[in-house]
Image (tube, rainbow, N blue to C red):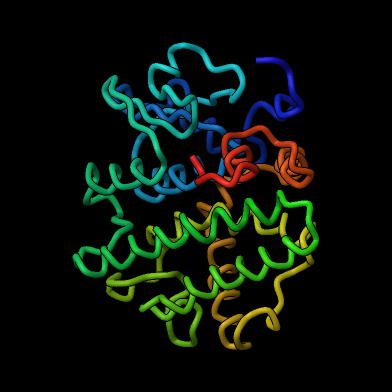
Amino acid sequence: MGFHPDQIFHPTATGPALELVKKHQGENVPKDAITFFSGWFCPFVQRVWLSLELKGIPYRYEEVHPYRKDTSFLAINPKGLVPAFAIDGKPLYESLIMLEYLEDAYPTSRPLLPTNPLSKAHTRLWIDHASKRLIPTFFRLIQTQSPAARTAERAALVQALEALTGASPGRVGREGGSRFWEEGRDGREEMGMLDVVVAPWFTRLYIVEDHRGGPLLATEFSSPESYARWRAWFDAVMAHPTVIATGSERAHYDQIYDRYLNNTAQSEAAKATRSGQALP
């Protein structure tokens, strides 16, 4: 592979994330811990990282350079993408599948999914919504160079956020209800699986607000109440200690996302978005 500007980025986590990385390297890690192949900058990595931390699962953090993958990592994930696990020498990858594995393998460690089968299925439906509508729209919005397309994609992003917020049986953001999206959580005030799935895109929403039309406004939502519900959810997720702990310094994200904003990024997600294909 020839050189391209994507190869210029900070090689390690910074800020709170760096302090967390240090706790999961070297002698601090049990020998039987999961090996977590990571990239500090990747939103798909962050959702798995959040689950590991929230559930208190021992893991060893291994940073993978996206353009200098060695053969040992490619044996774990032939796609060469993070996140990935090595568990007793066996590989696992794809972030949503990894989240499901953690729920199944550690059922008593701070469950993120509800126990009720129907509630669990509903949560998975809305994870599917986020995967098909929210996240692809985010990438299209930050990559498109067309003013008309930016307007349309921003409206679609708001619609996707509003649908998630309004669908929450836990009354996310409503007065007297939960701050987090929940169903079948027995009234517990804590992050659940859908919060974990979308949190990395909440933390990166500033890119949209700084470069694609300014802050999201109440007038873009169907009602002031709908905006207020979404904003309460957003603020709760952003203030959660584990979300903060898995985040790096914004300047280093900016270096990477500047290339998305001018549509020259060469990540697999950027290339798929540019070609109109589904995200990998």
